[in-house]
Image (cartoon, rainbow, N blue to C red; front, top):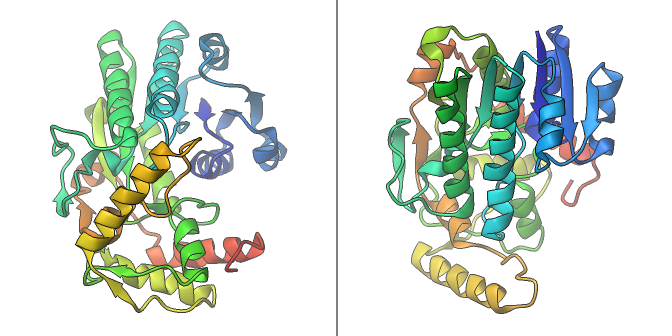
Length: 332
C-alpha cells in the first residue's frame, strides 16, 4: 500500500509516518518544514514540501496514492479564526478534492475531541454528543472539516474520522509545555478541587488506531471514532507526575475556578485590544480544561476498528519527559 501522510513535520504525523515505514508501507509525506522530516526521509519516506492551501500541490501529492492519512491542521485555544479555517477547513477541502480527482481509495482524517468542548464536565462522551453550539475556533473548524470528509463518501471515497483527546509521548509540544513554563515561574495553581478526571491518548495507541483505520472493513467506513487510552485519570495527578519527573516542585496551591475564569476573561479582552493580539497567560478554555471532567466512550473504535489501547499513559509520560530533557527544554 502507498500512503500519503500530511502534517508529517508535526508530532502526530511524524510519529505515525515512522510506524507506517516500520510496517513496510510506502510513504509519501508533506509538511511545511523540511528540517522536521529529515529523520523520516532517512528512513525511506518521500518528502514534498509545500502548503496544502495550494490545490495543485494537493492533487500532485495524491497521484498514485492508495490512502491518505490527513494529520495536518491547526489546534489550540488562541488565534484568529481565519488561521484555523484555512488550516482545518480549506486545506481539508483541497485534500478531499485531490483524493476524488486522483481516485484515492481511502481518507483517514485526524480530527479532535475539542468538538465536544462546551465549558461543562462530561463523562463517557459518545460520538454523537457534539453540542449544538460549538465553542472555540478549533472545535468549529474541525467539525466543518469532518463534514467535508464524511460528505465525500457520497462520491465513493472511503472515509474514517478519528477524534483523539490529549495525545502525548515523545515530541508532544502541546499538552505540558505551558504548564511546565508556569510552574517554573511558580504561577501554576490547581483549579477547583483538583479531582477532575480526564482521558489522555498515548501516541502509540493513536498510531495503532490510525493503522487500523487504514485496513478496517466496510462496516467501519464513513464513521467517526473517539480515541483515548480508555483509562480516565485525575488530571492533576498526571501534571504532578510530569513535574516530579522533570524535578520541578509539585503543584500544591489551589485557586477558585470562578475567580480564575473571570481573570482569564479579562486577560483575553486585554490581549484582543493589544497590537498583534498576543496570547494571554491563561485562556478561559485552558481554565476549563484544567477544571472539568472530560472522558470519552471508545467502544465504537474497539468494535469496528479493533482498537485495543495497550500503551499506558505513564509509559508515554516517561517517554515525553525523556524527550523533553533531551531537548534541553526549560524545566528539564
